[in-house]
Length: 450
Image (cartoon, rainbow, N blue to C red; front, side, top):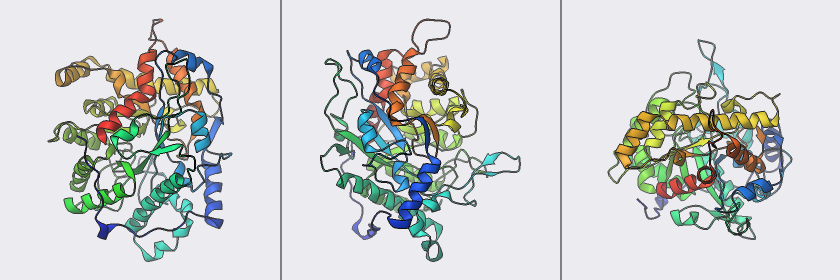
């Protein structure tokens, strides 16, 4: 269901936060960026082989998650470090980049079993990126501080748009904003379209909302975030909060709280995509149940960036059951490219790292092809295509190491095109299906979600 734009209540709209960080604050953010975001190869030329592959049908490229705005850098300037900036997005010919960001990133710690996990009691690494707020810790609670950070990220997004003198960007607020975006390759002679680059704002975690918050309070908070420009929100980040459980939390992986259920309904009524990245399996399962039984029809869930446990077994990565639960809603799995999710070693070759990412896509596809699930989806919808539920969710600039920056996404598409079905010369990802994974799936699901 497409909803009309809903403005936040005037009385609850936060006051302006102030200018982007400069001086010492900006210098600290840039140092942290250089130390945290690495790639083997950067500024890769768009491969002519990909142009040839898509010359007949064209392709759009969509990335569902990059944390670039978190670092306080100027996104319009090509920087030496990191994975994403506007010049590189244009060189990579992306059609849509979702800019996400957390407001609270606790340092991982070991639990009683000596396994790494995340707890809100440990040191918050995000403090280093918001040094101008250090004094606020003495005057405000943690919740208020995280809430202010969410609006500071939104302010950075708006600043990026304000600096767009040539109108090369299009902010995505409504379903129709997704029409006519830049295509990496068009059917006519493999030419690049001159459409705008779509940009969308996403948030990871409403950490200031209490588990017993009223439906009205939760809706007001979501409405204010919508008014600030957010169109995709994840209830949790790497640890559990008042909305529900996270996949890496030291205290266990629980499901939705009462406020978490209110949050889902608020997002669906206001036209905001729900992102289940970092959610615990129980939370994904419960959210899928609510999405399937929604009074206005099934609402799609999205996992904007994730690894796949079928190819790399770590707690954070999605199980086959998680993948199928999201797909059952007509939703989408954004497969990531960073080393913790994929499992490559720093010493591996560039080509080997990309093959490991392809392994993750293949493992997700395998989960979606399970005969029982195929039968379930055919019974529910009358049709089913497992390829419709796969997308790219890089997690670029998320304090991660990747084989490439955003200009390497075409290399990944070529590697997917070259993967063969086991024991066969048949491509695992035919060109028409690869077009869907590259961007069409994301555009379709976001239209429904908005």
